[in-house]
Amino acid sequence: MKKWRMGYKGQLAASKAIKYAIAVILIGVAGALFSLAIANNEAVGSTSNPTVVFVVAQHRLFYSADCFAYEDPITRRVYPGIIDALKFTEDRLQSCYATESPTHPCFGITIETASGTLDPIYTKNYGGCSVRHEMIERPKYVQLHQYGRQVQATLKLKYPRP
Picture 1: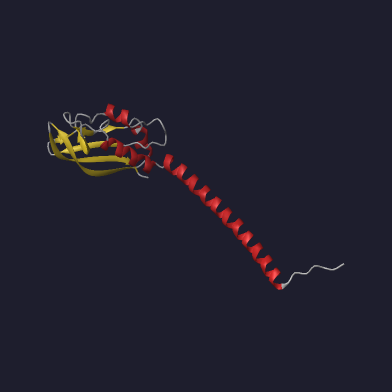
Picture 2: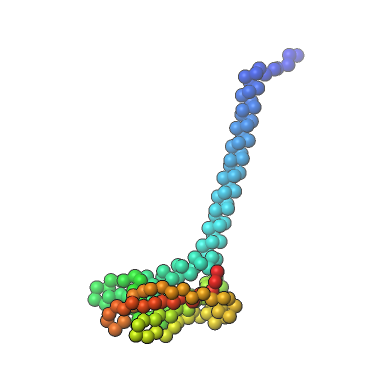
């Protein structure tokens, strides 16, 4: 019986095919691990990261007519970033920002104008949170719609250090 022998070109082609097969498998495994890591990172980061939750809540509070943003009663136009002094109440804060979940960070808001300070408002979970965590106060300059006109105001956010 005659043994079948592969020539040099055949050996070269076979070794290249094996190398390509291994490379394809490794690239596939690396791609699957990468997509798995991205999917897990997105799911955890978007739901439990207090900074993300706080930024989203802050935008909702100050840019939505349902919360604190001023809405012109005649044109119904919403002015994002301009806070309506009549809407700045603790009841409105509780309806706009739910704190039932432990992932929702606590915070307090104070608004100061040249003519005085509005009553500060706090989230429902602020009491226990302010005791357990070191709180930071960050000022932000805003417009406040008060008594039919807009005035410059300083909004002070008090929230736990991340």
